[in-house]
Amino acid sequence: MALPAAETDAMIKRILVALSGTPLTESAVQRALELAAVHGAEITGVTDLDLAKVANVGPVPMGAGAAATELVEHRLQITEQLVTEAIERFETACTKADVSFGVVRETGNPYEMLTSLCRYHDLTVAGLRGLFEYGIFHNPDDVLIQLIAKGVRPILAVAQEHRPVRRVLAAYSGSMESAKALKRFVQMRLWPDLTLKIVCFDKGGDAEGLLADAAGYCRSHGYEAEVEHVDGSPIKGLLEHAGSWKADLVVMGSSSRARIFQHLLGDTTLHAVRHAEIPLFLTQ
Image (cartoon, rainbow, N blue to C red; front, side, top):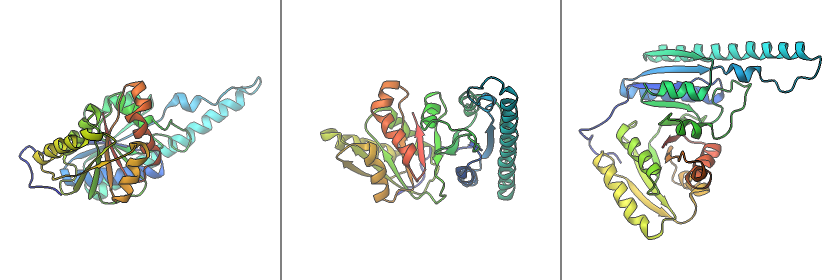
């Protein structure tokens, strides 16, 4: 449950939302609008058409150059149309909600572009899967985690179903990454009135102390958190626990260190990004 508001309540004022032209994009825009209304924030909608990907049609056999060029032009036409439609839907939604907004239309590397834009935004909202694909490309499953590693954080990664956020489950292991994620979430107070639960997996005798310290920190920021120690691996256990507890959102950190990313928290985060059906709050 939420306690009376702390004097140091942080508010977000600038939200960046990825307009990826996928079924998840509508949910991302809805979530951004919801938060903008609560916090009096403005929204920047961003599209990215990676021209290098458009031009990459694979090996071209001898004599097939003209056909390849035609294919590239066709892909570009389709993708540009999808980008335009995504922008129009975003503008209509913001106007209807009476939320201040802007649009950035990019044509470069999405990692570099989002890293640059996030410097001047408090939160990035994107779909869990299908970032800037527009039905033409396929980005790797770990694209959101790689964005976090490059400095795009925090990210609110949304699922297709849009529903109110009332119950939030935070994964905490005592690592710096999980601590930063929990701290950032409670400091931002995206949803001031919610039920927060902190769960610690497979830490043995350390779990009780870790959970008590984490709960104490949350209490200082206006949240009275439930805590639970769960035996077993978080890789599959985290989403299972979120489902049984009926969580509306999961808070978790992600490591940027390649080997650790592959074997510890990164595996948990990657599994969550691949399989989650509820939003994830991700940071490093």
